[in-house]
Length: 302
Image (cartoon, rainbow, N blue to C red; front, side, top):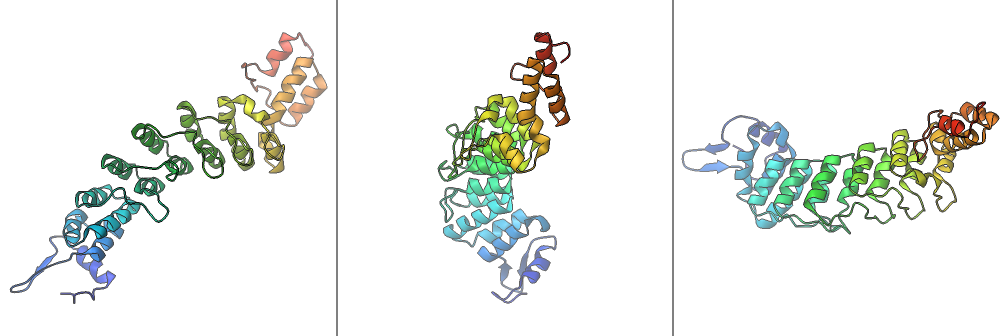
């Protein structure tokens, strides 16, 4: 028996770690653990407690509506879809906002739990795209599956929407090097040529961080963006140079120089480009390699 209101967390842990019903009886009075503090404990330790759902149902039976909604926010963060569903069934408000006006779906996406997101959507949870930057959160953690769920269920969601910095989800993915997200966003209409408040395209951000595969992917989606300049007058190549990402030089400029040298039959120029790391098999926007260019112009030496 634990004195009411005086149980410690370790006491609760010992009790709930035992199998079987947690209702304790003396000669006349049945005692059950209920209330928001017990429910909060169960949420925080749901993975370690056997049969947590049945304990949880009893615990929340003694909670008010506002307490149920507060617990719902905690359950969303915990990532347990079953507890989330129980709280919604008990009357939790799925459209309650946090202190910054964000929906519970934003928090669920941050946690990265697709099942919780689906439960919230099925229960009528809404988002405000001006506040709930759910695609950005999903892009930042490289979760194409979450982006798919969000786009499928919120038909008006805009893959080209911008945040306070003028950046799209593709900007976020490019900065993180998340190629799968870039490809998926591009496949549903995402643009790689949008510039942020600093005049940077996603390619500028990928070049800054040295993400080779992201740079390759962005160039495949829109090859001409490598000529775009930011507010400092720099192309993605200039940004790569500034940050010492020499492994990107061939993709971002040396390839162009090599193609030009091949077209002009400039053997010394070709040798110089190759010595600096240009890819001899680099293809232009028409799919031509430098060899194609040289052959087309009849440059035998080249």
